[in-house]
Each structure stands twice: as C-alpha cells, then as structure tokens.
Length: 509
Image (cartoon, rainbow, N blue to C red; front, side, top):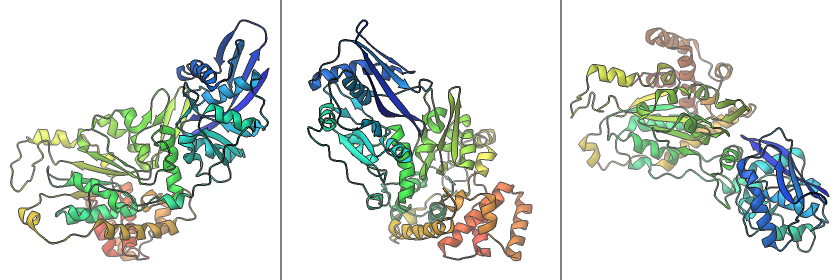
C-alpha cells in the first residue's frame, strides 16, 4: 500500500515542498530503505522511526518498506523528516486509518526513541511556506510551535508525541491549534550590559555612536587600550530602537534556519549584537560550508556586528565583507547551487593606533618602529575603510574625568532621539521595499532625499577636491548628513549637518 505525506526542505532561507512517499510491499524480503538523496542524518531516521513506532504501542511492519523523498534531485538533510516518515509507514501499513485529509497538511519534526517530538530548527520557515502555498494546517513539535504561530492565516498544531498525533488523525482526541501570536506585543528595546551614562568621557564618540545608531551607519573607533572603545560598543544596544514586527520576522527567519531559537521561543525580540573573535574563519563570518548556513554577518542582519581589534582579523576574512557591506546580502555559490543570505548589518569596529597601542599617547611612549606601524595599518585595506561611514578617535581618558561627578546622558534619553530619527526614516522609505535606514539608500535615493542648495554643493565640491574623496565617500557623507538632520528633525540638510558629517570622514587609522 502507498501513502503520501507532505513535508518541507530548507535550502538556505528558501523552502521547498517535499512529498514523503511510503510503500509497504506485501511481497519481497523485509527491509527499510530511504531514497531521494538523503543525508546521513536522514538515513539514521530508520532506527529512530522504527523504535519510536514500537514504543508508541503500534506494530512496525516486518515487510519491505521503501521511503522516497520527492523530488529526488534535492539533497535532504536534517532530522525533520522523522515525523512524516513515521506517519507514512503507519498509514501505508494500515496501522491507522486517518479520518482527516492529510494531503492539505504539513508534518515536520524529529522523533525521539520514546515517540516524543523534539524541538526542530526551521519551523518559522515551515509556517511561512504553508502560508505561501495556501496550506492551512501545520503539525510541528510543541517546543517549536510558537515560531509558526506568528504567521497569519494558518493553523499550527503543537504535537507532543507520535501517539497524540495518531489519536488526533483518527479523531480519538483533538490537538488544539495555537492561537495567533501578535508580534507587536512581544517587541521590546535591546538589552545591554552597559549604559551610556556609565561611560566616562568620550563625549564625541558617544555623539558619533548616536548618529551611527540613528542611521544604521558603519563606524570605526580608534584609540589606545583602556580608552573605552569596547565598553562603548557593548553599550550601543542600549540606544538602538526596538525591532519592528517586519524586521523581527526577517531576523527570526535566519535564527530559526540556524537552529538558534530556544525551545518555546516565538521570535527574536532584540536587535542582534554579534561579537565574533578575531580567529573566526571565513566561513564562520560570511557563511557557507558543505551545506551552506548563515554566518556572523547574516546573524547580525538588522543589528550590530562588533569587530574588536579589527586589525587582528585575517585580511582575507575582512576583504570578504566588501560585497555584503555594499549590497546588504551575501551570495554563497557552490557546485550544488547558489544561496543568498541577507546581511544588512551595522559594522562597529575598534582598533589600536599601532601594535603596542600607545602611538600619540599623552602619558605612555610608543615602542613600535615606523615599519611596524605601517605594516599594522596595512592590515585593513582602503576599500574596507572607504565603506565605513564614521571614523572617530577615542582619546585617553584623563584622571579628572574619571573622578568627575558630572552626570552623562543616559541610554534611555539617547534611545528616544534615535527612535524618533528612525521613525522619520520609516516614513521616508515607506514606498520602498526592504529599506529601513538612511545607510541603506542607493545613489538614486540619496539624490532624491539629500538635495543640497548651491552653498552646500560648493562646500561638498571643496571637500572632494581638498581630500580627494571617492564617489562612494561623497554619497556616504550625504547619508550621514541626512541622519544628523533627522536627529534634529530638520527637513533639509544644512551646512552644519554637512560639516559634522565631513568631520567624521577624516581617517583616524
């Protein structure tokens, strides 16, 4: 007898319909084979499924069983096919007779040996796929079901174990579908271990970070050890605005596909803040592998990636960020195909001025030779520096400032300004798809939203000629000036906004 059960395969962040065909033959030697390009994890499903069926109280057919995962030309990976395979075997063997039309449902999940359904990655993608295909019912692990419950117009059935699913399909009992989870109610501001008021001194750096947060701009901080660069970067999440529901779904898709959502978690509520070590590999940073997965730049999507001691990262790793910094996406091409991951991240980098860190320090003497300093600075290429909008020097903090009792502006106060600026940008780009901040504007949009008067054009021409600025630098200065104007709620860019933006373009490394 032949049975068919619907499931889903994930290729990067894309989902493909998989039809699990199960045939239990009445003739031939007993056996259990899975075909359709299964990976090792799928092959091992044979033992998990057999044991789970027996421990559920059903009989496992001692016949020739063939499972085909169609279409057969797509590589199948992971343990998510356990549940549809087990259900297909029970149906094909006549162990159960479903009283419901399972052809209009999707089944997805990993089985444990006692028949329970384990937390499985990629459930949000299953829900989105079901909505796109017009499929109303989705049966997924209970621990992962809240991910799919954020998707509109589908019924999500949280399955605890195989026995519960069998009883539901045979109408001996019912699994109640989850209520729709409203994403807006889950959103909250990003949490941080530091508050801006705790960072002593570095007022200019705080201002630069405020602008960077308001417009999603890349920023480079250069300064001696102990000047507070790392603390400033770690305090940055405290001034970032909350994710919008649309942004939260974009980020959660990536984390769901990567298996980084905890059991019971519905959605990512905080903006990502990734802090990769300088020993991170090329694949770890940009993504890829034999079965391509998102890297750190994609996990930082719509959030922050902080590279501490950026000059210590291998040059090849840093150079790989050129294209995603410009395009907001990373394309991983392999012999098996081409996969695209989103990567609209805000880069925050920190560097020392020299190998020892004390070049131009007011209290300590630098011990580096000119050759060592030159070699150190060449570790970060000009094209990478050109893609960083804001360059700021974080000076040594004097003793008077350390003991000063003058209060600094709190993160909550700064966040209100940043959120207000972001709201202006949301309104500005509402007619454009997938643009949330000024930093994501292309050149055409810069010309549209960053119009200058004759006086301002003259200032920009002078700056371009004097400092030999590239075309990319010119447009990035205008984007930063637009953000500064948004922070002051000015409709048009003024001379003072351009002057401040130009100041942040001067190289500090």
